[in-house]
Amino acid sequence: MTESYDALETRSPEAREAALLAALPAQIAHAKAKAPHFTRSLAEVEAVAVTSRQALARLPVLRKSDLIDLQQAAPPFAGTTATATAELLRVFASPGPIYDPEGRGRDWWRIARGLHAAGFRQGELVHNCFSYHFTPGGMMLESAAHALGCPVFPAGVGNTEAQAQAMADLRPAAYTGTPSFLKAILEKADEMGLDHRSLTKACVSGEALLPPLRQALADLGVAVSQFYATADLGLIAYESPARQGLIVDEGVIVEIVRPGTGDPVPEGEVGEVVVTSFNADYPLIRFGTGDLSAVLAGASPCGRTNMRLKGWMGRADQTTKVKGMFVHPRQVAEVVKRHAGLGRARLVVDNALGTDAMTLNVEAAQPDEALAAAIAQSVQTLCKIKGAVMFHPPGSLPNDGKVIEDLRSAN
Image (cartoon, rainbow, N blue to C red; front, side, top):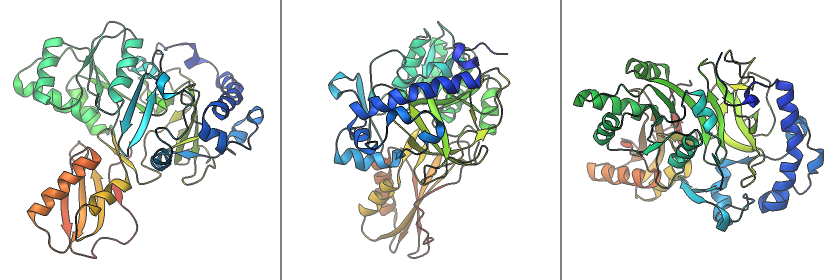
């Protein structure tokens, strides 16, 4: 039904599984030989014996939430990379901080497959609104677009009026970035009387694409597809025109495990997404993303035959993603430490108005506007995202250990 990126997408599930499992022992051996973290964590593992999903499931899970402490103890990458820093192309810093490598080579994060499924084609100008500062989002999408032969306008984030003017002047065919920012740009263009009709397609990530937002963008003339990727793993899954789940990328093995364990759950049950990558520079073995999802039964009607995920269904831990940035419980705790007299704090993330928003609910005996402004500044400094502040009487917030509460509906 849909033109595929390559023959890998339409091979039989049996052929795919056989190829992935045949390549797995060599990747595990490579990780053990070249990445000191895996030399230690997989010391008792015989790589040649890991030739099935059952054998893979017996290996330890390295969770993203552990990388902050691991990297602080052994900077910069905690021995998880197989390529020396001097031989990398770039190094990035995601909030936490978590340092992310980029190796050399075409489409290193493998995201071109997702853009192709979204309809991006050679020669089409891409308006890229992922961040080019500190975090790798901008370069992840730019390198993918270049792999397809698409020129890129490196717009980055912010400056909505300038974005709308550039869109009218440059007449891009496609957009990459968060869906809420695309909506803001298009609405600003309408407000300014600017023509944005050249833009007909978008491939988005970084926040939930809820049905009302997808429809609002369709009403503005843009067909929106989404993809699921991380700075460490690259592409994990992507949406096809069938709009029935996210199709797993050809370059990874995905497991759904019971949160807090490494035990795979039955098909259809919600659990944590755990990914094994075949990246030679960054050979992550059983990397726990912290994201919740579930496997959809059957294959996509588009003709692609790989496993499908239901999409992002929340976080297995309390770390969450807001406007494309991860926010960690430790960042909330650091905000509280910076201001005397505060009690419990709970960061609430919502999407009620179609855009991710967060509010720090905090106990304070003597709240005032100056304290609220100071706390808000700390939130922006530490989390790299603006957030509102709401005060509560001491002892009034729940004593349940929850630091981050995500109220956004699962897509």
